[in-house]
Length: 270
Image (tube, rainbow, N blue to C red; front, side):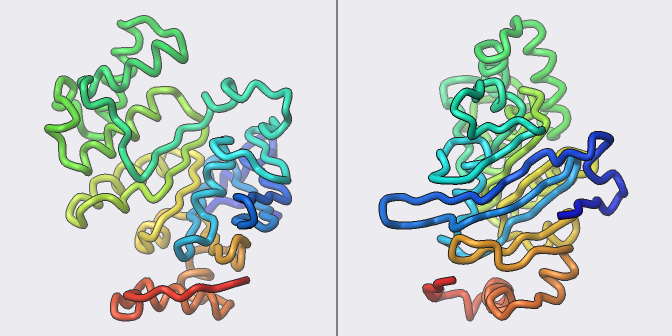
């Protein structure tokens, strides 16, 4: 698969994709959630993964950093096979930041402490160094004034931006986002998406599971539509969202963009 960014940076000088997924299968008991996924994400590329609930989007994302262990197949990050039983998975995970639907902040710690604790425990930074990195990343997400606040005093959107800053403070090469705005009130979504747009503009490699079609249209280099545990269609936003070639993609988008049709979601099989 050829990978070419809109800005022309492609996969970088090495030509090696940042993320490679080969023949990925994942089953939970008798339920086969992923049925042979092949996917590449180039360095600096933004790939948005869309599809109905239960299509395997989040499971794919969790397999990329081995939060879920694949049943079969291989996952490579920066050329390192993280599915190799002998790999130092903790070292690989330090390269991967992940932002979940829920914010997972420590409620008894201040915003700054939420950012510095992982740095000190995982990366071995001292308090001063960790504090400087925390302050810089809070600035990046527009929350410098909340450094001493506790999570309970923040809006949902602010908490999610803190969660993004916490992931960035670890210095990741890849960021994974699993429906980062799904738990937010609609009026809070914009600030979170603005931070993600900033990261895309900075050249961060990103995989984003999302239902935010406007974000996918504007920011993604490539859109992947999944259903029934397989990739049904992928291409540029103009191709997949603007002019999908598969009936399943068209049906999903019509339901997503028309609330009246989205009230009841049908079961589908590939």
